View 1 (cartoon, rainbow, N blue to C red):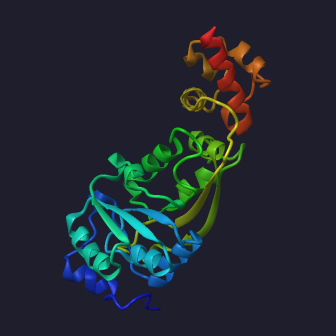
View 2 (view 1 turned 180 degrees about the vertical axis):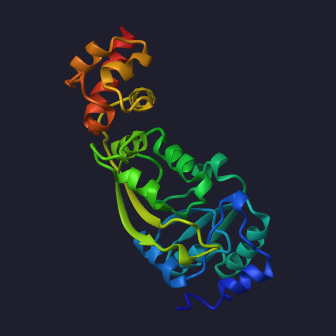
Length: 283
């Protein structure tokens, strides 16, 4: 294992602060500093950049981000045991690590930000990974306050994020993600890299925000995709009835065949459908 700094090994940190991973917090710690450095490099360049990290645990990725040049890391952690361990890192990198103890789902980093680019980089707790992502994708106004995200998910979730029309993994999350960002799976991480090892392979995914997504109201797009995929095996002329509008007219206006199914329609098609629905309800 390559040393990034002269701080203690992560296993020693875990023993010192009694940081046994808690399933209730979705904790699976990365102890390989070579791997945490690889994740940090995937977010490069880090010079002059503020990084928001969620669930740092004993701080392996935090250390890599700071060692590789991040101007500042804002680490959001709800486990008080880990907060104490992170304080040692803050002392080693004076003025560069801000520790926020609290629930990441309720945390808005914007009041903490200063000038310069911002990136979100994290080994996300599995139990809140998708809600966190959808919250960031729902940021208003757009483009968002971050210029990139590099996040770790279960491989199954990562495949949904990048799925294309016609595949079983393609769904609402695929559409919202690809409407507003360019997602890309960078590499996989074996369960053996974690303590404790999860039962699934993980993937590191990069998201680059689209500066100008196709014009559409986000809430309307979410409502339309929810209706369409709520009965994904049915044709759209049937599944869209839950919207309370005439599906045939909406589909015709969006240039979509009434016999099509949700999983066959690209992001552009759903944007047209959402815009048609918005126009119909506003009339």
